[in-house]
Amino acid sequence: MLKMEREGIEPVNNGSVGPLKQIEEVKAKGHPVAYVGDVVGTGSSRKSATNSVLWFFGDDIPNVPNKRAGGYCFGGKIAPIFFNTMEDAGALPIEMDVSKMNMGDVVDVYPYEGVAKNAETGETLCEFGLKTPVLLDEVRAGGRIPLIIGRGLTERAREALGLGASDLFRKPEQPADTGKGYSLAQKMVGKACGVKGVRPGTYCEPKMTTVGSQDTTGPMTRDELKDLACLGFSADLTMQSFCHTAAYPKPVDVQTHHTLPDFIMNRGGVSCALVTV
Image 1 (cartoon, one colour):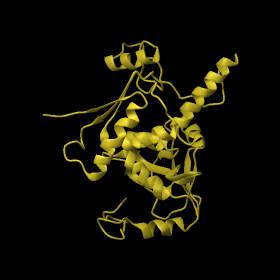
Image 2 (spheres, rainbow, N blue to C red):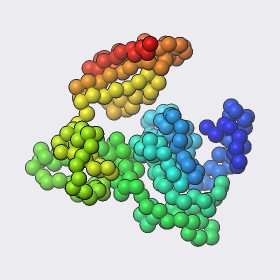
Image 3 (spheres, rainbow, N blue to C red):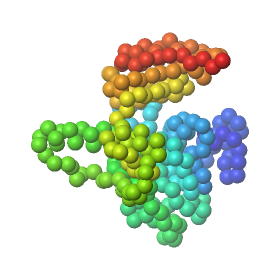
Image 4 (cartoon, helix red, strand yellow):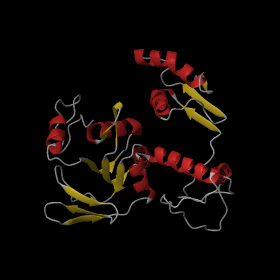
């Protein structure tokens, strides 16, 4: 991570080893370290980028080796997919004006009040708003996926006990209905949610009937399914494809090709190879 030299970044070996010394100097101050930038999370592999950030700045997970969660990421603009992946990891990503923040600064962040201050001078660096109040629940739950699962289990348990809906969880803010028609995509998502359609910005949990995973992210998908103790897929069709790595496989790809199909098929999924001519 950050292995290419740029303003303010001093890699140990330019092009191969990132700024490990700088990271250790910041950590030595004894505070949690936040990853900050004007634009954060652009690029093709947001999952790997999140893993890199958490590896250096996240928290160890008890009894889970070689994996971390949590962490803080502040940016003037955070790429949506990277933002969502940070949510899944239980991190706290916040879009805010970071122009007054510098390498090594100690900053006090008040997520409920929506303000960030310089810890030494008390100067207000910026004010901000969370994208959704549910973000705070996601951090407390250790990630967006654990929150969704926990919320669903709570709902089912209360239904079985004859109890009403729980008020324990924060509710996402839903956009106002414009009264206009729906696009085809909005109708498709709406049908999966049991409604006529959904508006942009609506939080919903559609029923998935088809799920796909491709080869370059397949091993990470497998690891997440193990973390969730998934023994079988509930979707009608779950497919694992092999396309990018099939033409000129590396040794690690060959091993994946031999092991990943059985993992998917043993859980009721389908593995297939895609060939482009």
